[in-house]
Length: 253
Image (tube, rainbow, N blue to C red; front, side, top):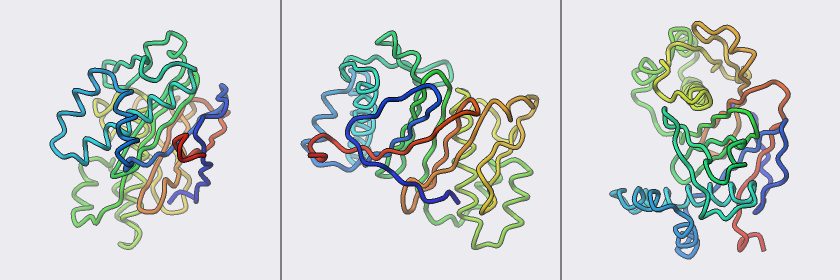
């Protein structure tokens, strides 16, 4: 499990410099007036995507998640959040395409249930994942579809009471890695190993065909809050992580 994480409350991001990675968490269940505020920030494509959700709950979560992302990007780039243009790479990883200087700011996001997490890093690739815990009657079957043989062996060696937390530790670390490298599920999940045993620091152990990856990529687990697991992966060794809880300007007053 990740150690307890101290989240500092803020409405405006602090200065972000090259050796740093900023992690943010944000609630997705907000009152109607805040929902409408974030809806007005969406691009035309995002507004269309929002309308495609069948359930109102999922539509609201999407609007707040994307609106919060735009708010944070706007603050980092000193740009109008509604005018920022985003595009997905060939494997689906999002990036800033306008304003031009925003291309140097790497970011990634993930959300589960009513919580979103965001990672921002200047000039270095980054990936983040958050998962909400739920009862897993099919834990071993699910693990067999996404874990490597080494990870499965570690999971099977643990007492049953420790297996759920180890499962989510492994899942989030693997998701964060494939998001960081920009490959998504195109990169076989059994082609790399991560740590998952309780008390073992989050770490990349093996990447098939790429031994240098263990030095290029760093991994950290974090505690998004009760009932969630989270992990972040980023390039480079000299990095300072800081954790921020997003509040609107109205709430901060």
